[in-house]
Amino acid sequence: MRRNLSQLWELFEPVVQGLGYELVEIEYLPNPKFGVLRLYIDSENGIQLEDCTEVSHQVSALIDVEDPLPGKFNLEISSPGLDRPLRKLDDFKKFTGETVKIKTSMALAGQRNFKGQLLAVENDELVLDCDNKQVRVPHAAIDKARLVPNFD
Image (cartoon, rainbow, N blue to C red):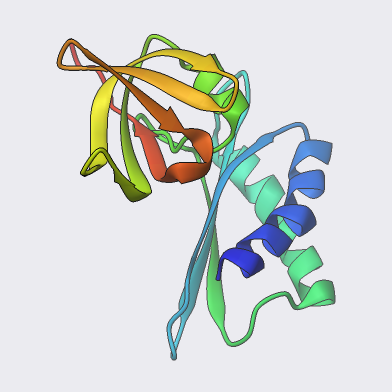
């Protein structure tokens, strides 16, 4: 599935960027009856319903032509929300100082789940403060990462 996601990024990112938005994340949840293809988009001005509609029309047309996924699925376009997914190194740089939750694809020092303040991005590693302990997480080891909303 990772290969398919890479292909979907290559297909959709230029279209989304061409409309003036940032493609934040792609989720594909296959199902024998009806799957879900979800694209998270963002912009400096936030995301409104009209933005989602505009992207949906363009991406739908592209899907009709390219047919990138087997079977039937619903296309959903959404804002990234308060618990925004983080994927690219630039995402992490942009949110330095924020609290993040990270799940790695392999254990690092016997641990796969990390939650802490993102202190820095150095080369291809994230530096986190997890309970007053500095932890380094290689970007390549990240399976999923999200911002942790602050409601204070």
